[in-house]
Length: 212
Image 1: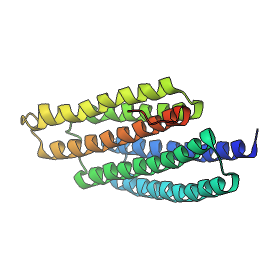
Image 2: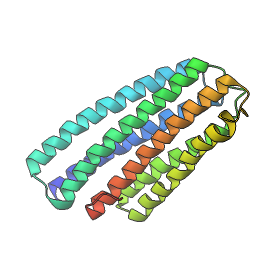
Image 3: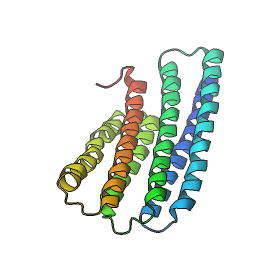
């Protein structure tokens, strides 16, 4: 294994840790929504986690820049390093959206009367999308990346369906639930979009072109 291959593997290992942290932050938010955790406590933990993701990204960005300057990579190695930098930033965004969800839960505090499944289902899909997207990057697997891209419709659909069928029609009788669930589903929809972007980076690393 060449020196640059070793460096790329080490960088990717750090990014995997960031992906695991970002997923754990989302899980904490879901636990708060389910009433298993106190929103204020979760917000404090998610705040710290989001800061760690941001700090790690800044460190990795500097490391990747130095790796490029040192090895002057070409072709696939250059694409890989560029993609890893983009993926690292995407994980920072995931952390920020998890923080937005935690802030929403802290603001509304008691959402026990809301339809929990409206949020849990999309959250589980989003988590799976991130895991599969990272798998696609690690294995340079275009088919897995394409599965992630296709899954995005499910999260988008959950958000749009809630607005169309529950909020706009007035079917959702609890104003607090209408606002809280709309916000959370929107944040999950954005998180799913970033999972798609990670999957697209996996495709770029293999083909050298961004998927349409």
